Image (cartoon, rainbow, N blue to C red):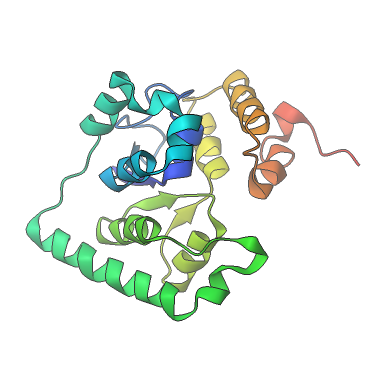
Length: 197
């Protein structure tokens, strides 16, 4: 089994349309997706996210998240705390490096997600370019959300119609990142065609 850990935005972009999303093996490497409780806490603390994604607290979504939770033993919890501290400290010592291009630096939750990935040998999925930069600093495995979607397509967990629906929703919500837009006409060119102009 290969554990794949979704950050908040990746979960919110995919969970409503890909059912079930979490806890189901797919692909040749038996990928299994999960989210941390920290992601739930982040959504519940953020009024904007709660209003944009009212489905988040629906019972079915909560039950799916609970069933896919990964439990840590005492040694792993200690390692998680240590890794989180190192990652967060690294960000805070050079915040300007993570804020170029009007980015926000990786948050405390972002650092915890990456630390969890390090402790449990998980691949982290995020479209946060600051998190990608931080992961590169520590040689941690990380994917963009569109890369996960491409792996799901290869494993026949999603089809072309669902990929179109996901892209339509991202565009409608003003949530289409530069990397998703680039992938639309490269990785998913057979669905959307090459970029024009």
